[in-house]
Image (cartoon, rainbow, N blue to C red):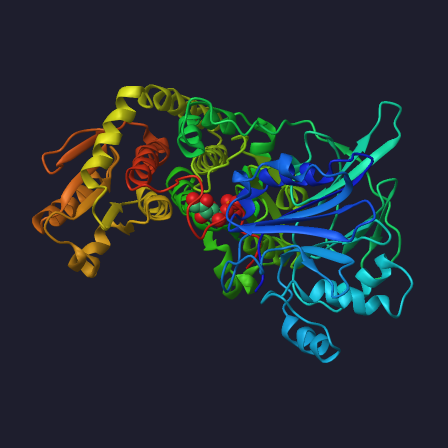
Length: 600
Ligand code: F6R
């Protein structure tokens, strides 16, 4: 059982390592929240382990205040098998001296497990991860130091992973990366003396203590005892010099402000976040527009919601710039790899900048010599650092699992580029800034209350369909994702014209159907599709700038021309939020999901 997770460790002069890692882990919960665990070493004792199923956010870090200056921790999202205490990390070596947390997949774990079992090792979990501490213990028999044993063990693992191992004898942490992110935080005293090191899947885990970071690249390993840190090539052991980078951004406090949930807070933030996305360096946007114009094939790649913004991008480029681009879900990109050539441009779109399928698409593109542009929210993420060019959408931290403000920021950037391609960057910018003023007007308390009421009318239904045409078609697909993931209602999105080719058979008397409509040349067509639904008994919720007699409920949206897709999705986001709340679900942490999908 592999895992996709958040990992965090500390070693240094502080004496509350257990508390530090529990507090830090709370910032990594977006990476998985089905179980958590920590291990730490108190004076003269073997490693102590505490683990539980459930969310780390409900744990009191003061319960882990025993004197300790070394600890590792893990918050988990299981990819196969059950969620249980014994499958939670950390995992211990047979002799209890080594504990390990792991993010990713050890693909050959079955062979290794059998080999270790034959040598007398006992396994307490069903995870792939447990082979790691046992194999390190085994390797220690033939080498003298802990870090060499970790290196030798890692060389035997197949797959993409990040491993953090703690040794109670040498009081050291060793971490290795072959795919999943790992970042070192350096804590220094005022006189510049090293005070300790943090190793985490993401910077917010240790930002309270350090804004000086060093990134591990794929194929690298670090060893630290809290006084110094050494980066080496995982394969050869050759030492790698590493730059220290000062982080200039702030992790916005995990503060919901006046809101009950991050999801609603982040939806409301679109009043400002779309404008921040539009505020790009104009010369850079023009350079990118040129690169698309000159590329032999442009590919837009993303997963989930980001993929829907890519699909919308295909319409933006076609309708605004009369330019064809190819769109693929990152996980479905393989059959198209052979089209990539050095003159191709691959645009990867990702909120987190860590999605495994997107990273793989990016790496293939680079191997083929194609240029990669990343449209990313999280600064310093792997995709942001490794792309040839990066555009940050500046939406600010997105904590709710359901992506909202990142989507609209991504679409705003794509619209901007499409306008730049026809040398009308200023027109595009004005339209988008006008749209942000419209979002501000739209998201007023009366409107939010009205949407709460609409959710109240439909929250007991188990099926819901959404239709749209042109750029409202990807928004219909996105609406379905939003409603499914937070409310668990079976929602599906369709192109309006596709209904009568099959899906309309699903519609019964009273089935709620949402129609996403713009004031464009396709308005008549989509109204026609809506009438067909109504004729089969559907209750129609129209999201449109103008009312129509076919609507049972009209959700009024402003007329926003090319930004209509951005405007139309916002009331659906709010509706999804209220559907979740009214059905008693937690919209911020839906079941079975994680914010950052770091396994394929
Ligand atoms: C849905 C959602 C996911 C993500 C997808 C890609 O609300 O958030 O579908 O869009 O996992 O994630 P990023 O954008 O981080 O690459």
